[in-house]
Image (cartoon, rainbow, N blue to C red):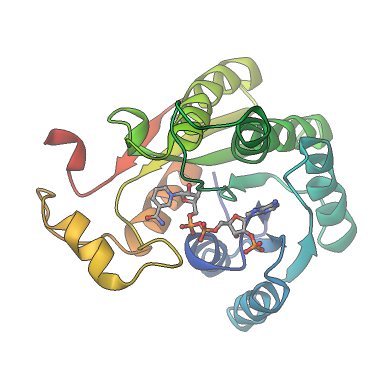
Length: 243
Ligand SMILES: NC(=O)c1ccc[n+]([C@@H]2O[C@H](COP(=O)([O-])OP(=O)(O)OC[C@H]3O[C@@H](n4cnc5c(N)ncnc54)[C@H](OP(=O)(O)O)[C@@H]3O)[C@@H](O)[C@H]2O)c1
């Protein structure tokens, strides 16, 4: 798939991993719609950086805690930049809970934001894509769906749903739309933790370091460009799954 000249949506594109993805798309010539919830200023700064890379960029706020709102991502993109043919579902929660203490409301909140919104964003994206245009979706998941955390129960179940959603949607939306996922390991420390936190986690990895966003962006671009790959979940985890 030739990326240059396409329009792409990045959910959670104003900060951290999402921001790096948005700028990676921009560097590849994709006009980017940078979605945010609360990070209005960072999203605008990311858009400005994208424009400096020579593409068009727009920002828009959608609260994805209610999956009913997810279709607005496509509407806002069409209004600002034109028809999207790339969707990267990166926005997510990361609550701490266990099966012993999660409430029904907290469970629903995690599943709505982290699983249902990517599903309904993809549904809206597919419904809007014209017959004569191909498209690609990349979901951001977590390697810990295979080796679960002890303390992020609802999150890891929701991301496990993303894995199955990726494969099922890839089958149902083929051949016109490809759906893949990138499963992240230790990429950045959580927002309220310092670099030492991530370094401690990374010490046990075969590749013995924190990934940073570069390898994530490279993998996403490769999945977007490679027309013969769909339903794939690529781990970017420094070999963590081997130990
Ligand atoms: N960082 C890592 O090492 C790592 C590891 C494994 C997996 N991942 C996955 O990679 C992706 C990005 O991770 P990250 O660490 O960059 O995430 P993060 O810092 O936790 O950021 C969360 C993102 O989700 C958005 N978001 C939160 N609540 C929202 C809501 N109600 N409606 C719409 N958007 C909402 C935020 O938007 P605003 O800031 O605009 O509110 C923000 O862009 C996530 O899917 C995460 O699960 C990351």
